[in-house]
Length: 30
Image 1 (spheres, rainbow, N blue to C red):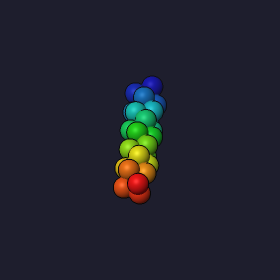
Image 2 (tube, helix red, strand yellow):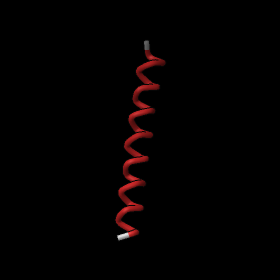
Image 3 (cartoon, rainbow, N blue to C red):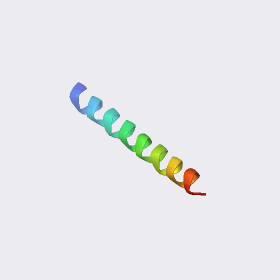
C-alpha cells in the first residue's frame, strides 16, 4: 500500500513536471 502510494506520487510529480516543461516551451516559443 505504501509502495503504491509512493508510485502514485512519483507519477503525479512526473505529470506536473512534464506539464511545466510544456508550458515553458510554449512560453519560450512565443
